[in-house]
Image 1: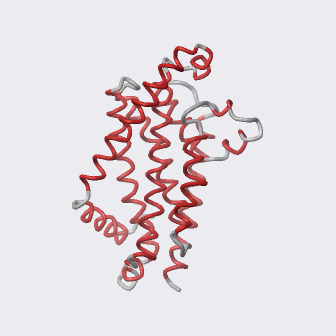
Image 2: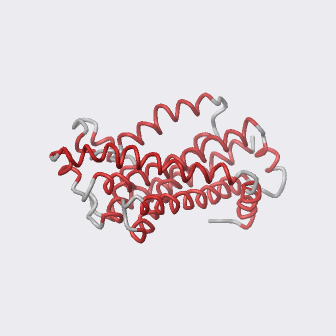
Length: 260
């Protein structure tokens, strides 16, 4: 449950963001433009002309199929970034967290306040993405706005999980390892660029356990007006269950690491 002090942590992030919003805003605009133009339009033209590959995606065009998957994957990456670098900075590089807990701010407040700020940032990036995708003709704006909801939830859950883990790490080398061996493979192989049934049979069950795949399915279902691979409650239940576990673990690890 959100506490008044956690809201103060959120306010602190918002005040600091006034000095850095220009750079992040440009990135939020440029990233979807480049991906949608290069992959959705460029590669998508070849997929649509291929016939067999085009039928496999069961969508009006590859661009329309790809855009909602990229939305979910991009917000997952945003959540992972918010759960790694600021946490490592607060714990190790700058040490602001250890100073903060000597005030009325509790470790749990830091965890929740950081997550609230990340949630606002992720939602904003999602809305910008939906507007850009609509400009490309990838999805109607109203459907894109709906699709932001499960995509943003996936990003927030990722942020909570990464925060819970990174706060326990001492070496910054773990950040590169997490990006290289977890975040990038998830981005590539969770149904963003191609259906997961194109993967080897031995790999598919692993993908079905990953929250991002469920987030991609929910996002794509809302954007295209189609049914997801599994029942809606099952997809949503997996994401929510992982989020609840991440919240519980994060509150524990922040308290343990900041009260030593």
